[in-house]
Image 1 (tube, rainbow, N blue to C red):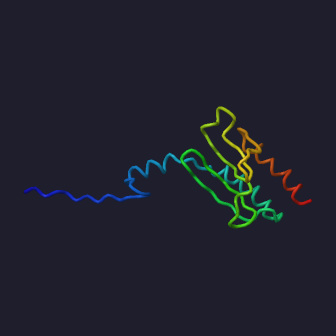
Image 2 (tube, one colour):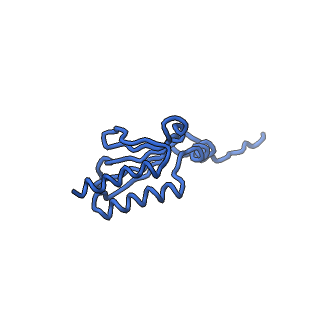
Image 3 (cartoon, rainbow, N blue to C red):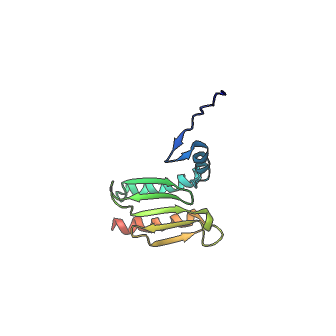
Length: 125
């Protein structure tokens, strides 16, 4: 009687095999180092002004999201979203408010982040 090979299969996130979950990880959208540096620069200015307190980063299949919170545990006040599939259309970047409304959209992250320069002045008054 021939012996059967009992190969180990590692499961990740439900029933996905490790090979399948690895391919999902590779296809996720993420922030480049320069992009994250620019976002964190704005975040740091807002924290030092006492406006923001916490953030979260989500890297999903189609989008990367930098969520900004006024207080820990609250709904994000703003989300900076990178969606490369829209790069040729409206631009891959957008800022949404806490109710999901798009407040700014564009192809250039630097121009998009200027939205918060005015917010610093308004929130400090």
